[in-house]
Amino acid sequence: MKRLHQFLREQHTSPELIELIDTLLVACKEVAYLLKQGALAGILGSAGAENIQGETQKKLDVLSNDLLKKTLLSCSLVKGIASEEEDFPVAGNPNGKYLVTFDPLDGSSNIDVNVSVGTIFSILQAPTDLAGDDESAFLQQGSKQVAAGYVLYGPSNILVMTTGKGTHMFTLANTGDFFLTRELVQVPVTTKEFAINMSNQRFWEHAMQSYVDDMLKGEEGPLAKRYNMRWVASMVAEVHRILTRGGIFMYPYDYREPKKPGKLRLMYEGNPMSFLIEQAGGLSTNAYTHIMGIQPKGIHERVAVVLGSKEEVNIALDYHRRLA
Ligand code: AHG
Ligand code: MN
Ligand code: MN
Ligand code: MN
Image 1: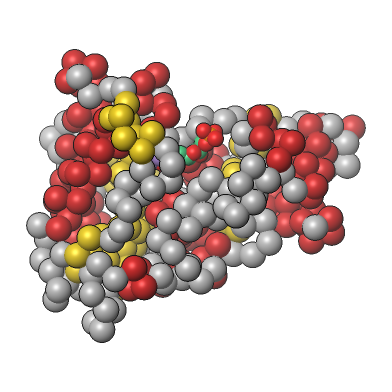
Image 2: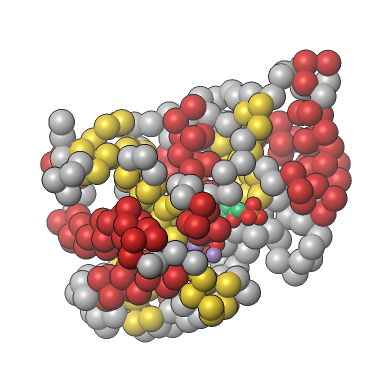
C-alpha cells in the first residue's frame, strides 16, 4: 500500500505543498481522535455561541476550528486562513506562500446523533501584494485553487483530495498514515440517485420543482427512470457517495432568504467540492454555470449547488435553461 507522501512525490507535488497538506492533516487527525471520544470527552452539544452564518455553533465546530487555525498558522507557508467559524480572515506569516479556507466541521448538525461529518479545505496561492487577513486576497475563482479536499470522519477516516492531477482517496490507518485506497476516482456519468432536502420544496425555483417532480414520477415520467433518494445532511458524506457510486446532490436557490442563494458557502464548500468532482469527471454548477467560474465577492458568500454525475447534472441544467 502506497503512503500519501510517496504518492504526492510521484505526482511531482512541490515539497512546500506536501508540507502544508501534512500540517493540515495533523489537525484533522486530532479532530478524528476527538470525534471518536465524543460524549466521553464532554465535547458534544452546543457551544452556546452563534457564527457569522447565524448558526448556533456546536462545541466541535469551535474545537475543530481552533485546532485547524492554530495548526495552520504555526506553518510558515500559510499567509492567512478563512473559516466558516471565523467572521474575518486571520493573518499568518506575511511571507507565506498559501492561503487556506476551510469548513472545520461540515455536517455538524449530525454530531450529536453520531452520523458522519467532515473537514473541507481549499488551498490558494497567496497574492504577494495583499495581507493575509485582507479578504480580497481570498476572493479568487475556484478554478485558481492549488489543491482541495476533505477528510470524512466515518466508519473509516478517508482523505479525498486533488492537486489538479485527478481525485484520489486515502484511508487513515491506526499508525496515523494515510494509505492510497482509490486512485483517479471517476464519477459514473449516469445515475438514478438524487440528494436534496425535500422539506424546502416550496421555496425552490419553478425549474427545480419541475425537475424533482419529474424524477419522482419514475419510469412513467418524462425522465423514464426509477430514481432513489438519499439525504445525509453532511455535504462531505453526500459528495463521497457521489464520487464512489455516482448521483446528483442539490442544495438549490431557495426563497427562504432571497439575498442568500442557498445555504452552502462558495469558498469552503462549493469550490473545494467542485474541484474534486470535476477532477473526477463530474460536473459542479449553481444550476446555471460552473461554480468554479464564479467570481467571489465575499468569503462567506453563499452559492446554490447542483453537482454530480455529468449526464444528470446536464438534465438539471436543461430544466433551468428552459424553465427559468
Ligand atoms: P455545516 O455543518 O458546515 O454548517 O454544513 C452543513 C451543510 C451541509 O453539510 C449539508 O449538506 C447541509 O448543510 C444540510 O442542510 P440541511 O440541514 O438544511 O439539510
Ligand atoms: Mn455550520
Ligand atoms: Mn459545511
Ligand atoms: Mn461547518
